[in-house]
Length: 134
Image (cartoon, rainbow, N blue to C red):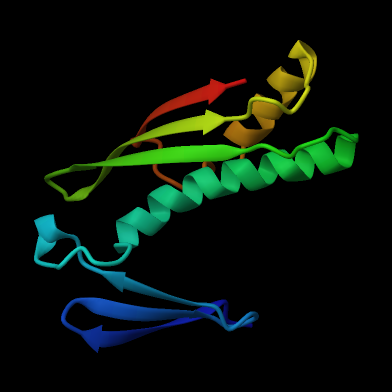
């Protein structure tokens, strides 16, 4: 079964529909690549998906191991590279403070996050700077 559809809207914009839920995301090319930058760009979505996946995997880990998880927030900075144009670096700052975890749990949560499916799906050439604030 297909996951999504992507329709070109003109003006370097697309409409992406998640088929199972019907959720719609619009994209726009970034200003540094001929677009208006008024919506997520496709590479913004990849960068954001990386942090979203990490935050979600932490939730799965905590649910499976009986740990409270009420506070998770990430800030993502995407840095583009050239020749070829691609995501060159991601700076991800994850705030996990105030979850009441001990040091052993914190280390396990970090390992789980770093092994998320998106992390395993992107190029090994992608430079990462990931900070966990706990």
